[in-house]
Image 1: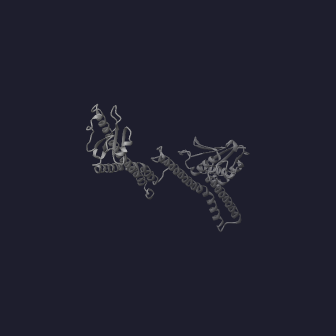
Image 2: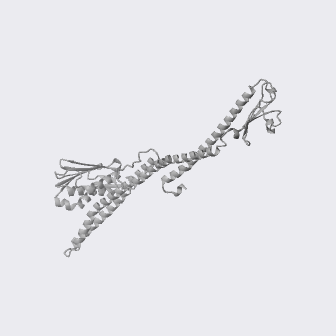
Image 3: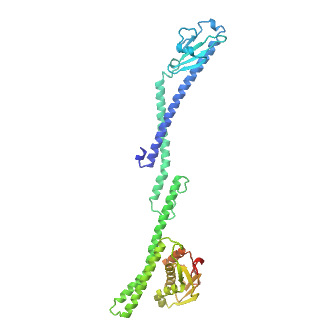
Length: 411
């Protein structure tokens, strides 16, 4: 029956009710046994007392024939009594109870005599329990019913205590989940606490996954915007009536380079989205100067517009063991940020162990990451996967960015 109810409270309550009924029945049986045993004990003690009084009544017990007790509930027999029931003759000295006839027998022997005296007590006539049996059982049933009714109160409370944490947990999980939210039952040390912590972990993982997808969308949009703009502008120039073959060829080359950039960006974000590590990603020896030159060429327009002077120093033959796509995207973002948000000049220092990029910034910049948005986020994610160290600082109105390549990645 309990499985027909969807409510845990009702299931728990219906599980406790049979237990309450069993306890009540056991209580009734024990009370009935206690009454019967008490009645038998009283009958036995009464017979022993009467037997002792009969033996001590006279030292010449054998010569007196009329001292045997006889009442409505007690009869006495001698061994020679012709009315002695046949089954009593086989009894030895002691106490006996005849369950079938509700009689108690005490067999005694007077001192210095071989004769036996049989005291027979009729329990039905002796005790008033039998006469009041209906009343007694009615009281027992009434008490049992009262016990059941009274026990329902703690049963309901117990069922509520068991089901309430689950109900609270269900209500909390139906609310909008916010990162870092703590379920109220998470601190419990029982199974409910274990379930709460498991759900909390699951929701947190889902929230982190959703946040990664949002970042992925923002980063992909940010990265693809530049090549798409290049393609759009190049096609617009090609469609001009005055566009000659030389301009067409040059803009087609720009479209090809932008398409290559798009392919590089897509490959990069596929790697970032798969939660890979540096061990899982294909790595090769990449000339660092070639990556920097390609990034500078892509930022040619803002560099020319701001008349930024680029200074290259360090080891121009440095090579880094890395995934080529990830390294290109990281360097492209750093140089594009420096070109878009810097002024006058840009310093780039190369070495097999690291790359340093610095440029002056406006004096009213309040934060080192102001204006550098998603580009820095992408670089941080790439450094995390490649196990590189990204350092960003601002000193004397100059913006400094460096990537330290780990020794296993350096040649």
